[in-house]
Length: 383
Image (cartoon, rainbow, N blue to C red; front, side, top):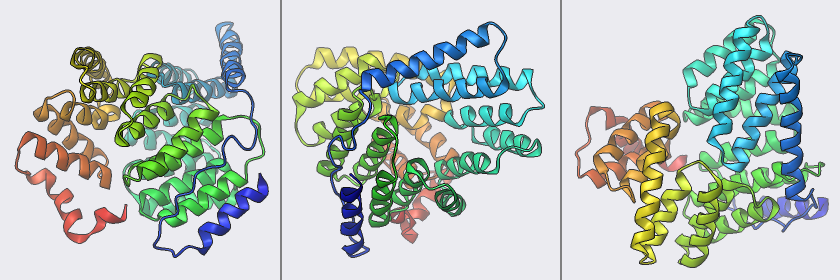
């Protein structure tokens, strides 16, 4: 596996810098733990720490680790309820141990998950004042800066992390950032370097890496290449809801409707995230199954209503996409797209805003001007 990964790096390095390199990942190499066992181990680890917490015997370090593990399960299994559970645990931890930097850092991470960026940064400041680990602080701040489209802030932080602690997560995060900046050849090189650095047997990190590379390619409409990476992530960890859902989106984009419906049904029925349900509704409608499409549209709409009521910042973007189509409420989509762009004025948020304006047949207002300016100065194309 090491030689193959190095070969991928050499191919990337020999291409012209302006040419995106889109190589399929080596299927299921290196070998990793059976996905069912891996997820079972994660569940057991969470249950074990929860039992200690229930007895009132858990340390701040143990509860912080529990928060991270519950968040991780939410990320891979598509469980918004786990994210909410982690957030509640973090709130309680800060209330019980306001003197401990680890408590503030744990809450910063959960707040960033729900796109409460200002709150997350305030918590990192509190953690720093209590002597928090510098690398952990940088990781949270880099993630917030990247999510807000502040790449000039995020890049040196990601580069410092990848240099100081090179590994699949730090290199993968830097690769994802370079992809968002439009540097696809450099991102591809970094993804290969991240893959080559991996020495563990857990499937989670490798599945995450393939998902990130697939997402980068999907955002550039490179559907065949994106599909290869989503397939790799899905094969390595079939429980990975986001990878399954995005694989379904790729199949739909490539005209493979039956495969898309099967994958999106899996993601929509195992996750409490409404996004795959919305994409499933669209695929069913395209297949002429209007009754089934209407049922899934209604299910997605009810769940988006619930989540937007509690976590508007985190779900404004996908909510806007849903109400453009298949939700069929362009004015609501436009309100959400504007909210999302004000929060995180990235190229992709700008694109969503433009689509919402077109769907609503609305003229841009003053708040939309920065998005239009991105188009005029060409900065949109660089991200």
